Image (cartoon, rainbow, N blue to C red; front, top):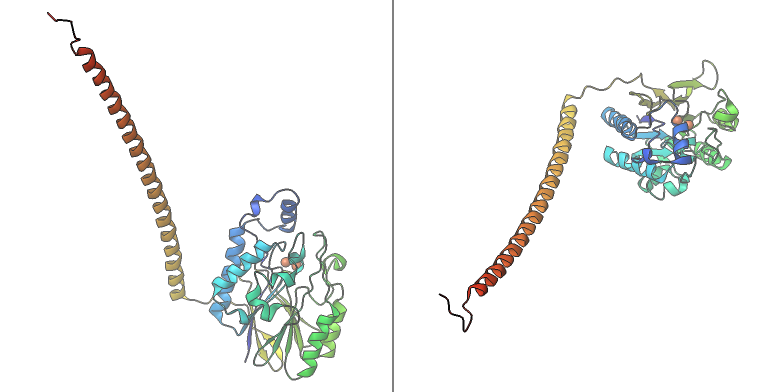
Length: 339
Ligand SMILES: [Fe+2]
Ligand SMILES: [Fe+2]
């Protein structure tokens, strides 16, 4: 049985975000509505969510977009750093972009997966798929370049053709579309929704082995295509907003069966290890700071000694010259007799 972990909407910032000015500052301020512009807190949330997923165990992890706040290259570098530090093998993670990853001076997704996210490209670039024992996960981008005053999306038809081809080739195997926007109409649909959501639901209607994992709405939700029908569309809380955003699903009888809301697993040993690691980090930092202080003091002492020696040398020279003058003044001159 395959187990899938699902996270979404990390909205990661860069360390120097507070040094932004002008339009760059306004954009990140506007996009961070109701979220504090706190690089450390956002990163900590992402690290915590990845740790929770790893602690619970899974076969594959899907992160459904809004990975960054506004798609800056340095924000993708932060994401790569966080994923790397999680220790989760890259081939077991599927990433895809959301509307926030395509704002402002955002790096296009295909460039991001050739750059900072290259290690995850095999399961995350356009046209890729993660083939698991009893299902296939296909990342589909719904991110489109647009003004940051809008948050809509659109799925390219060739991406849906790719999913349809896989689903048709293996009708007995569940196929999971991983995309950012929900495949149904939402409030303020023109501004906020997936503009061609009917094309995705059309695919779901045509292929009953296809399900969707999405983000964007920042809410835990699930629904079927018809009232009372099997659940086929799922979303989790946003990592950026929620302390327990992780969702898990088991692949059972050709469909995703969501697990009940997950409580943090008791892990006293892990907690001790993490505390020791954290303490080690603090000690390392303090030792580094102490070393720097010692280095500065030694340099300062060296300079002071050099200055004193130079000063002493000058004083001695001056005294010797003065003494020489005095001796010369005391010497009897020829032809002068002293009484
Ligand atoms: Fe989001
Ligand atoms: Fe979004």
